[in-house]
Length: 57
Image (cartoon, rainbow, N blue to C red):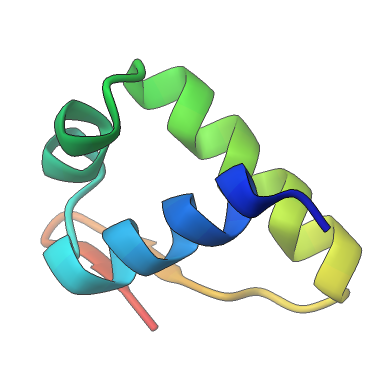
C-alpha cells in the first residue's frame, strides 16, 4: 500500500473537508478524491460518507 494513500486518508479524517485536506497535501481536490477512491477499492470498503458538510468516517 502506498504511503501517499494513507497520508491522504489521515489528513481527510482529521480535517473532514476535501478542500482543506487537498490544500494541506498540496494536491488538487480531484487528485485527493482519486487517492481516497483507490484506497477504498484496495480496502474493499467505503471509508468516508460524503455530503454537503464534508466527509465523515
